[in-house]
Length: 505
Image (tube, rainbow, N blue to C red; front, side, top):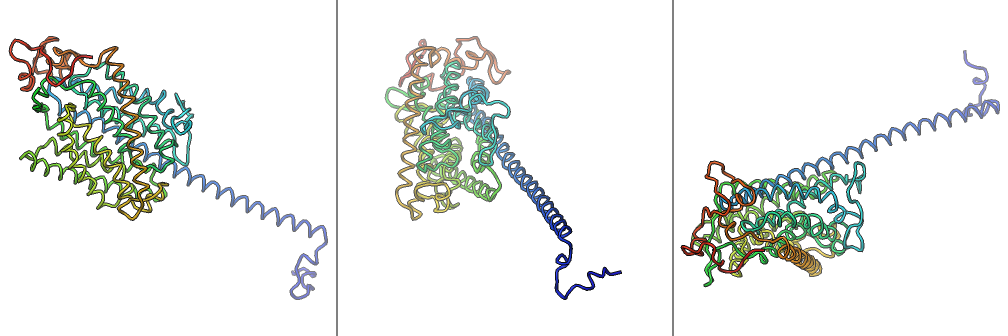
């Protein structure tokens, strides 16, 4: 039955206009309450959905960071095999031990002070001032990225910078001296440079473009290696008094080639991982960076092989391996800034530079058994400057650079900033590493004795060689004397002076 009051309502009138005042207020209150509850429910659901989306984004970006860090860490295996292949049998265990300790000792030092100096709140744009000895929960999220993931990823970078030096100083450095050095590079020298460029420091504020570390990572390792190699002196028999350079071949090119491929593989964490995440369009950017990395490495290997053929008459495997690495180092700064055609050009020029750079350092009697200074230093400089030539407008603007590449229609300002960054890092590293190596040389000693060098560092420093089936010799006994060493030491004078410099610490 229809309520009589309703039946008598005028056409178009509101129901509540005929209700008593108390009922009207009750109806309004109930309606408002229902509406508020509905809006609250919608808000809670929306907030929960937003939190779930944010949590998913953080999870995806964090796991990408961790996976990329694992790839970069695996580069330690690549460095170990590459350097082991390029040294002689009698020094294989020694070079592998240095790679093990770069990661192990470097990890503890990075946790204690390195991360804080690199990414703690920048003090005057020069050095970080907090985040030392981070505890569980002490590293939170910054700008949607887990700081714990940043810590892990950047530890792998720090270990890389330290390991570069081991190749440049191979076959004649005291193990104790090298460990002392590793603490300083992973704890002080490298972290301060990172603060300048990636930790909110002065170089980053200028708009210096180094996407993944041609200068900030590879340059630090190379220039520290240069300082050490200069103070250490060449291996026995490497350089004759008449200027002749004697090749001292490594013992296993299979290991060297495998090491190069592992490094190339790990570089897909090094460069694409530097997107710092995958969400927000970064997944596509990471894929293009992987393409640029591949093209540059391939071009470096092809060009280095070709130049070696014309220069030396042989398609040299060692130079081809270093050509691929030269292409990888050269594109590391610009991997996220340049077009694929430019990546090929950058890598190809890196392949040229590494061949002539190796010859140059031999000419000035800087003995670098694996070519680390040329690969990571010379090509690191080229790759960093190449960004100032080839960076696209959109990429440079997104980074906050003062201009894009000069050859891409930009002005010279960006190239100028790149020069500043290169020379700042070079000057800082040469000065600090030079002082460090000089102090080591005058205190605990930097170089092994001539007798120990002739016998090999494996037996002298570690008590066992890398190949147990080979006869073990007593400490001080000269084994596996190379042609260079034999020419340096006439019969009856096995401990004669080393041509071309050198000497104990």
